Length: 216
Image (cartoon, rainbow, N blue to C red; front, side):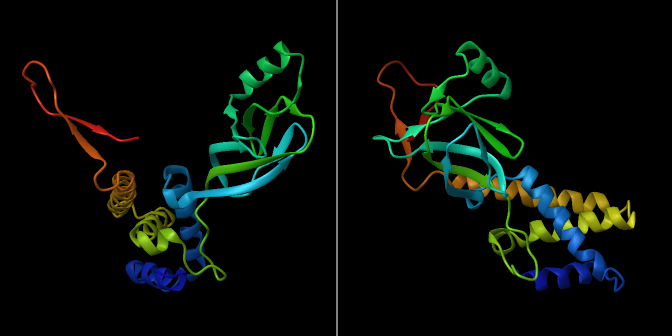
């Protein structure tokens, strides 16, 4: 579903001709809610960055870290994440060291590295990114293509809140949450490819039930 088609469908469901200027707001509120609730394979991005001081600016669409790798080493080094409190404790206990980074912590829209880099280091950031917002310059994204009902019911939910239609709100809330949950389940199933389920036989006693294992 394209951005224009979504706006048309929302207007058709609402059966209102006086809300045209509000439709973008309903869509943006839906995207904000999806970004808080959903972590999907199509939200994973990679970026490269040069770290040459204690703090590194995060990408503008950053939602959460998956893996931070230090490039240029053999093999590459995966940095470990600390809380801000643990990062402060580490710096205090080690006299605020400099050197090759080993740890990172997220502080708002910046990443803190420790030890503080003693030179320029290349980093690869693998992270969950925001859903690319729909608009005049972006007619589609993965969500509008694969799960347009998430957009539709989310927008109708926020429209019902705007219109104070208390009787319709629970219906659209339920449809929106159902669509989100089905997308999560689809993602979970896709993580196990065909043939990855192995039946392991017990070699002693009488098993009460079959035991299944997944390949990592």
